Length: 494
Image (cartoon, rainbow, N blue to C red):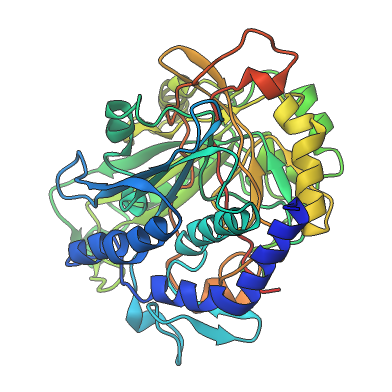
């Protein structure tokens, strides 16, 4: 008799005996979207690595589409339809990686060769995102084998190759293929655990608001021996402007950027006792950094943060004895749904002017990714099934958080979006703790030995059309809300 335990046993067996070799084949294709000259590798990944696998699983209508945005990687779609009356799952992943940066890897490591070192696998894409969608497909194959070739639901797949370049063209592609991609649930990739051994149910994602701070004082640099102390140094002005935004301990001083009513009570409740960690040597939790009076979990799951991503004045790699003519910083705000991002730029302009920084310009400001959150009490989050399934498969009690992030680990994500005026609920599924792989999140060495981990995880606003919406909110099994989410993989081998 086919059973859930039988499918999990098959998945574990595949992971222990064959998954490493399968992942090594995927990693060997240098499908970086951030380095020039790899357009052919992006297509080869979809055509030679993914298409045959999908064909063996019984997918039909496997199509590799050109990206709607010229110059960006193609998008694969496929479907496996069993019955019109069964629910439909749409799954997402991306086959592109960040830059290889071959010359920056430690001795004995190569980005395009899967390498074992202790309990860690190194290689580009092992966590983000080849390992993740490979585990998705392997888990689906285990169910097919256990159930005699039937999943019990319909399945559609979107696999893009421009995620590490901001998913250029994806929104336009999905909007154009809205009807073909109609589904009841979207299980995507990328999302964090609150700690490496804690399966996580997250109900949304913090958004990203990006902007540059720039100051331009003169056409060129002037000699520091003659002008130093006489003419304004733009780097110093910019540094003070940034210091006026955030104090020495990371507290945001532009208070109009923050949730007016603080952390919502429902969010505080769900975060009570929530652990935070898993950065290893790559990151530490500094108790006195950030907003005073908040717990570590509230700071990252229920509050806004300001980050300086990069700063530049002059040429640090080849400095000259001159007062620089300009200075620039790229910054962003990670924000919750409790703040309106349209107010960020005006609030910052008022703040800078009030503190005497009229010369500092705000440029290229805008939302890079919208924030989302479903009520933590929503049945997909608070109900028995997600938490029970996660715990029974992984052997660990799950934790719930109001948002997901961008670290490659393993999580369930449940969040909410609005698209074309349609209110939707969202969910993603978790892998078992046993079926886990790669090099980034839980192993401290991974982040320092393999350079350039990156990519924005959020797919907020990804449009999915419900096949048969119901007006009965009490029967979430029949309500069939539109769902999207982030599924990802814990990085330590079992």
